[in-house]
Length: 335
Image 1 (cartoon, helix red, strand yellow):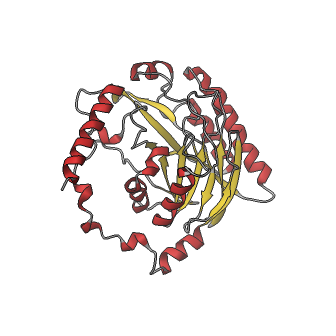
Image 2 (cartoon, helix red, strand yellow; image 1 turned 135 degrees about the vertical axis):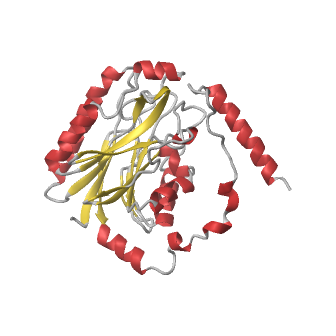
Image 3 (cartoon, rainbow, N blue to C red; image 1 turned 30 degrees about the vertical axis):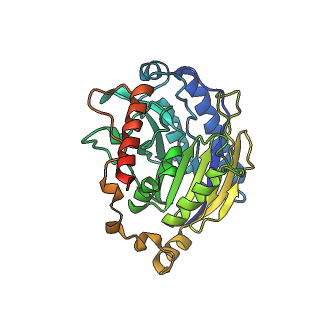
């Protein structure tokens, strides 16, 4: 098993697709990026993990779940994941895909925002965004369904370490990323479409801030691939790129220059170093220092799940749930 290899954070700059027929061209370009990166860097770096941004296969450009399902949503696995799987088998690499808008026949009135980890043996895990960027994203969360059976926070044991993933807004919730870490992740991928002004430049450089914080507090490597799409691609938003890899001490190992555009940056992942530090540290080991019992706030309900019969989601129903959560929060925090 390789204990030192390189990860590539790959950002894209595609026009916003209007139909699922346009996905194939984007997959073709991302497959080219995989091959170019592995082959081009081979004299210097052993690139084994490649990550792509959120919405690389389609963004929620329609104002209803019905339209998203009609025009853009796909089931997973599909012909596109098959293409990635052939590449992963050819090169012995692992690909964290950009997100798909996923339709699942088990949930007929729902769209999930889903990324897939693909390795040499095929699809290894499927992660559905737990914290959609509400109110604008009409995707469902696993949190919305009682008795949801799949593991919401999958971590996969691979020859390049234990790999987990979160999607964009998930990283503003320390509880979400901490759960991935406590599920065993050593490397966490961030698949993101983190738009301006919360990008990689001061004074609102949340992208850099939260990437570094999540890596430090969980003693993990973080490989973060962000959209580099210009304003004309996805109005009214532009994305600043700044894709990066951060080590377990919060050091930025590599970062694309902030600014729109298609870019790839590679950085080393040293599993031996990570495992050694995890094993020897007494100070600043926040995982073993966590005083779980004293933090009672997680025992109180906050944002309510979507109720039975509330799917398909709408902007109005999401705003109503937010208002309910805000009212409950005010009641709970008033003296």
